[in-house]
Length: 192
Image (cartoon, rainbow, N blue to C red):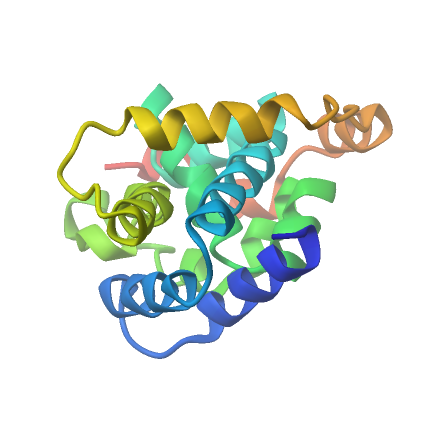
């Protein structure tokens, strides 16, 4: 699976009707149409896209939205959610974290106490991280088995890729410009 195919899946996933459960079912179905190796390659690309999200500026933005409650795991799930928004949104937010203020799912949370957010409304999507592994298990007849074969295949794919270079110019711009629109939508004292 190449980068273009990965992002085509993510773009379609972001446009699919229904909730996250229905959208994940669609993704699993799309991955089932390929091979077990393609499911592994999908996971490797998903993880690489999530790794690019791991900047201080984006962590601060996620924490701002989540009222100071964004844990380490929560930030990983935020990265998955961001990738699941599709390539255009993903790239816009990587370039300028304040672009989160334009994401409809984020805007729907403005002015609402965190305790009123439904689970599916949180800008986190942990379950996206398991879709490829589940499909791999189905395609290889190893569902329910130890995930060792999946992780060995994933390590093999990762081992063939060069380490991505961090775009220091993008990180510097994001750090310098901050998130004034997002800060205005989610004032620090309004987190509860």
